Amino acid sequence: MGLADLTGLPYPWDTLGDVRATAAAHPGGMVDLSVGTPVDPTPAVVQEALRAAADAPGYPLTHGSPALREAVTDWFARRRGVPGLDPAGVLPTLGSKELVGLLPSLLRLGAGDVVVHPEIAYPTYDVGARLAGATPLPVGGVDDWADRTDVRVVWVNSPSNPTGAVADVDELRAVVAAARRVGAVVVADECYAELAWEGDAVGPDGNARVPSLLDPRVTGGSTDGLLVTYSLSKQSNVAGYRAAFVAGDPRLVADLLATRKHLGMIVPAPVQAATIAALRDTDHVVEQRERYRRRRAALLPALRAAGLVVDHSQAGLYLWVRAADDHPAGATSRDLARHFARWGILVGPGEFYGPAGSRHVRVALTANDDAVATAVARITPS
Image 1 (cartoon, rainbow, N blue to C red):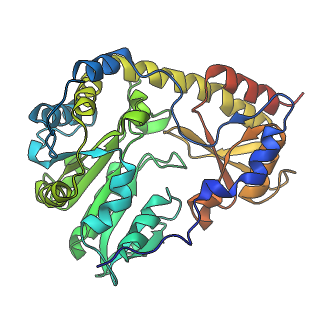
Image 2 (image 1 turned 90 degrees about the vertical axis):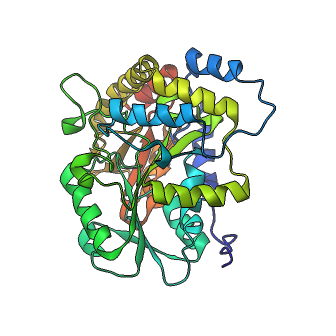
């Protein structure tokens, strides 16, 4: 099986040249709210762990150190409501995007196999299917693919990038039941799970309560056919470390591990040590969440006061924004992105996330406080 040629598939952000130029021409300069790149400092506890592990002359374990796998299982129990996860079902990855993009290939999918993903979704789910020679299938819900015997992988993204929508236990349980009927693997991308703002996604103590695919209420007590991928980039400001992991069904993880050993896909030992430190420390996660909460609290009312509509956005790092029907900004995501650009603000057109996103833009919370204050001042009607 060969990998598909993706040279004719443009990288979405490379098509924003005209919009970027308009935003950059603003007299006060451009405020970039287009991407989810963390801008706040990497926590000291994580930096110190990386430095302490810098003397690493030998090859680390592809499977991750026992301490790392134990830290992941402990974190799932403490923070995600998933007790008793088997450490054999944990595997560190080089960031989560490589796992998302390569998983269909690593699972040896090909022509005739279908990879299901949300109709509004991170584009790498689609790209990963195409790379393997499989067929991506964007869907609005379980009924769009249930009982299709050609479905091999089903992607779930909760909280969603870009919409911020959160799937509840009943929704996740329905996905698992339908996938198990046809023998498909379900993979949940949950990297925004610690960043919840509204509704049932937030517990009485203010902490995130976003259900995991591996929650026993979802799985029925078995992780068979289920995987969760998670990145520390957002919660811990370590995008530059590429610190992430996949966890769930030990049988599936063993299969991935065998292939990754042959390919040399090993997370560096200092990054493994930093990952352990990040997972064990909750204080920095709470501190970072409060930074994003503050920025969201500034942007959200400003957008609404400007006559824009914010849909979903209960969790995650983005506000999912559209123009009201009578708003002069225009009907398409490109029109709306150009409208923001005239304020000197760069945002992400919703069309990047599928045709169903063609009326929205994604507004990121990942800018520092001064930049967010500048954006709010520009958006706020005078």
